[in-house]
Picture (cartoon, rainbow, N blue to C red):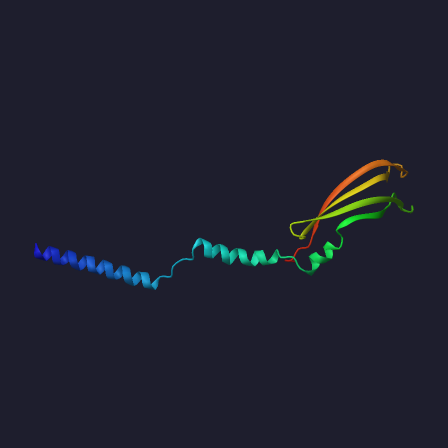
Length: 128
């Protein structure tokens, strides 16, 4: 019985020592928070607004414009007036634009009432 207890004690001590040695050699995998920081911080830095976004900011407001539309080859462009309203969103990183044009050329190329309304989202890509 004493031999069995000695063998059991030696086995337990051996397993304990092997466990300690294997723990010290192995690196602990990074935690979820560490992995997210490593992945997200560079991406968040690309989202910061910069000088190019300030240039877009100069377009904020309501603007009148002249729209020139080509109605066919060898014909002069048809001109009509429009209004665009630029509004910033997401701390000035993007701008919504609402376009309004009341008169547009029809299929025959002559101006006619259209009441066109269009939208766009404008921004600057820091990555490219």
